[in-house]
Image 1 (cartoon, rainbow, N blue to C red):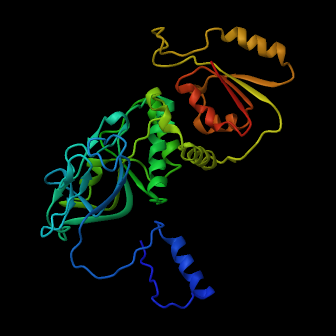
Image 2 (cartoon, rainbow, N blue to C red; image 1 turned 60 degrees about the vertical axis):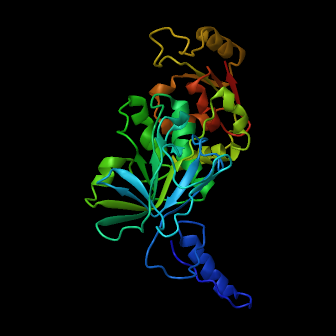
Image 3 (tube, rainbow, N blue to C red; image 1 turned 90 degrees about the vertical axis):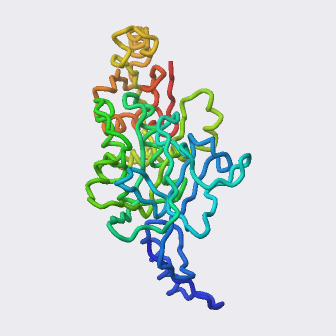
Length: 358
């Protein structure tokens, strides 16, 4: 990030000076302004978080950005560097008081707390030898539901984008590091590139092979973001969704625009889509988990007979590439769909459209 000089003069900035500062501001990868009050020969870690700030045990949805944090390849751990002469607390817990370390579960890399994570506090300065320093924003992340479109779209890959907005950490070439080996699930692989490419052109990497590829003892991150996994589909947490609408809408619009369409497009004629969920993990077992419309044929016949002049089609989404799905949905005015993951395509509908979830 560039350092912006701030004048101590009381005189008002001229238009020219304001223009220079504005241009510098727009060219930074972060919207924060750093002011150097003094030079330090040694560097230390710092962090900031949101979510359950005063309860160390409420870690599942905590989101943090760490600065100057390193992975020690010899000890295979992330290290947070603190002044040895001060040993300042790293966290205030309203019940436990000042805490001097992050514990074992400071945040989760996946939803439902499936991947607890915490850095290890080291009372020394950032290393200066045998080190690789990465300036790009890096996100440490773990996929939890590789075979569900709804979770992938809005909770998992969506969270990467939400976190950047929530923490105001913007980088058009950020790197997402998957904590464990990347899933080989066909559904996950089908959507991964379409979703991640809307955030960054960089391919997802597996964290350990990626870090080991630098062949240095320490791999240090100027900015490492982790945690913040938001859940939208847990009935016990529905009240938490209030206020998150803008995050979802911005992600929806970003995906539509990234794939070449207008997120504000409004169709001028009706088009009805009836979803035929003919494929799922539970389809062959006749499980209640296979949420299909039982009387599909009757509904199709009714619509064709009742609305003979309105454009209508029956769609099997799993057979259609994701960009084409978006194109079809933004031209749809009425979507009829079973519930479950297949229905979570509804946010791509245009303004004024309706979804009938059966």
